[in-house]
Image (cartoon, rainbow, N blue to C red; front, side, top):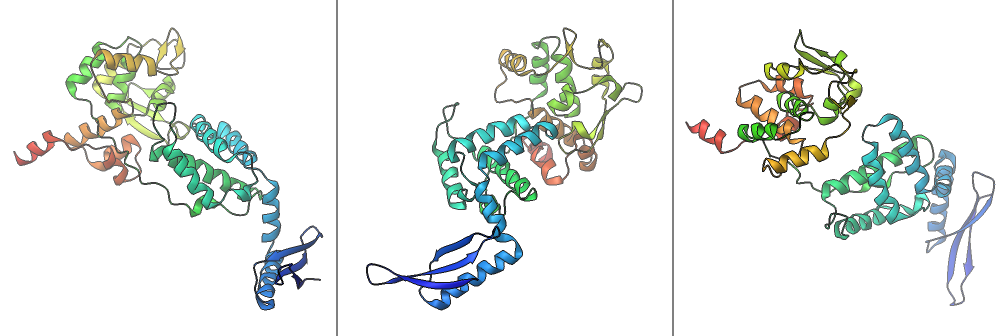
Length: 337
């Protein structure tokens, strides 16, 4: 039977306690921060309410589940369903390092704030603290892991939902000029050139390009058909093949199903060759993903409607599209001219 009682302290005062049976039938005696019997009874009423709703059982279960357990579950899911799971693994490495393998109820908003401060101040492998965007990705991973744990009834609450993510200043505006592009092509190895032309002429992401198979390329209709499983948004789309890209794709050898190959095998990654080519061409502060910025800006300057550009690039909103569209001095001078 649930009840409240008080115990005398050595200093002459007293403390209030509540007694109840937990969901597993165990007799629980718990000290409560009450000053009067009425306050103790209110604490007990809340506990009884949580007992009846099942919330107390969830909280008790959360004490038995460790952080590493739900993070490992999340990684296992990511390997099977997410293309970005390797990046998640890196994010989770830092989370594990800071929090350790503690019960879920030890991961509180206050500790999360400490984690953010730690990541903002600790020096990483690149010799500088983590950027706000990086910290937000890590928090997002943890938030998703908790949501999955709640769905699987391993957790009752998600502490990350009560944390405000950091402001990000990560908008890129690097656009490759025509002369830069031509010089980059000239100094790139043979296997890299078709990849660069595809990026420049379509604005496709690197993963979408390297994952292309010949059955997705229709040179007669001049379109590339991307499947939902290949795109970041999970939705398929049709990408037109420009005359320049058509010239590059047509003579490529069909050694296997892969469009872009090196020594007979599908090209898996181009980081080293791309970085070397940029250095040889004297091109700085340019990442492969900036080809999307370049494509969007080129299309806008040619007068292509936003909705058409979005259909080609797969951007869901105008706001996101405009993040990739750079307005520079050339645009301003053209406007007043």
